[in-house]
Every structure is written in structure tokens, then in C-alpha cells.
Amino acid sequence: MKTTPDDPARTRRRLISFVCAGVALLVLAAIGVYGLVTGPNDADPSPNGPPTPIRIDPDQPTPRLPYIAPSTDPDEFARDAAHALFTWDTTSGFLPLDYTAVLLDVGDPTGNEQAGLASDIASYLPSRDAWVDLRQYSTSQHLTITDAYVPEQWAQAVEQARPGQLPVGATAITIEGTRHREGIWNDEPVSSEHPVAFTIFLACPPDDPPSGSQSETSTPEAGAVPSCYLLRLSILDQPLR
Image (cartoon, rainbow, N blue to C red; front, top):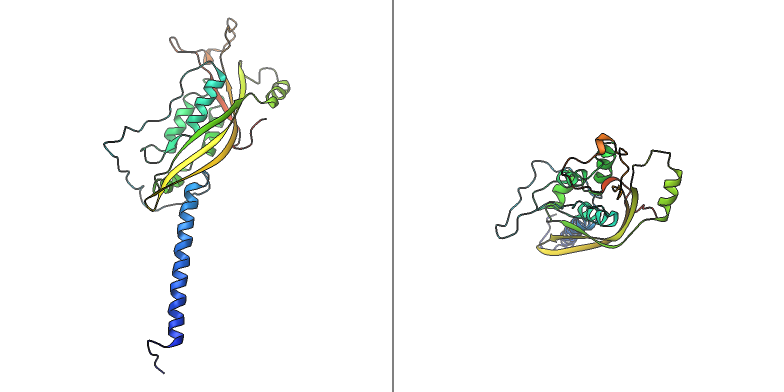
């Protein structure tokens, strides 16, 4: 039997199709916003094809990587390193490895901790695939620091360390703050904030180093500015207290 345009069964099927399509659209929208505001490694898509080219606005300042100034002040150096760790912009033309290099450049000059430090940094930054996905939303991130201090547990760690296990001037600074992330969704700016805490392990040259106490590999080059350097990072949100 043929159905007419006003047949109730046909009308019901059409209504159900419209409802399903609407629900699917809402789910896709929610997934997009979730990928933008969640943590760095929460999404790890595998897009096909090369990354989408970035459009550079000639009126905008030239993008630059974060900079960690040489310093012998542990608190100041740790704050600069924390900002460099959390400051990135997917529209800058740089990739996660470029931001990683900024931190490795101020790592252990002996090279003993470089591999571990590189692994630590990778756990804080988006993977390359996640980076490509976040770039579709012009995602950027930065950190505001609310507190920086030497944790009490560091004294216990020093007591338990074997002789020579820690480099001269080693210390730990726990950073507490807020991670800010901004982006564009459906041509509208969106943002998120998330509290974070982590510990930076570093070493700073003593004010008056004993003669001959430094190894040849850790002695600064002639003319170089003495500075603290990074050793390792704690797991995010699992700092020393």
C-alpha cells in the first residue's frame, strides 16, 4: 500500500531522523570544546595528511619562544622555567620540540640528567598529533604563579641521598599556580583555567665554589654567565610539599 505525505508512520520516521541528527551535532560540538579545554595529553588524535598551514597575520608581532634568563637565584630561575614550561601557542609556527629545546638548553651541563629531563618535559606538553588538533582551534596556554617555595620534603630527600648523588647547589622549588588555556570555537573565543602544582629540581652555583670542586664537564665556558640549571621535574600535580 502506498503512503501519502501525511502518512503518520512516515512523519514519525522523519521526525526521528531529525532528532538523531541534532543529537549527533551536539555531541560533536561537546567533543570539540572538551578537546580544547582539557589537559595537554588528554587528546591524541592521528589526523591524516600534512598539518594545516598556519596563516600569519603581518600586523601581528613575530612569534617568539619563551626565554629563561641566566640567574643564580633558585626562586627566580624556577619561576622563569615554570613559565617556559607552560607557555606555548599552536599558531606560532613552532612545534612541541621547539619549546622542549628551550628547557633542555638550561639543563644539566654534564648531560647526566638530560634524557630524564626530556622525558619529564614531554609529559607536560601536547604530543605532535595533539598539537595539530589543538591548532585547529588556535589554542594557546600560559601560567600564572601563586606561590613558589622550597618544600619541607626536600630536606628529607637531602638527608637520604647518598654522598655525591646530588650536585653542588641542588635544591627543589615547588610551584603552585593556574594554567590558562585560550582558543577559538565556532568563531568565538573560549578559555579554561586549571590549578596546577609541580616541583622543579635544579642546581645553582654556590657563591664561593671551592677551588677545583667542579668537574671539567660542569665548569662554565670562559665568558659564560654562571647560572642555575634544571635537573628534573616532578609529575604534574604530584609535587613535593
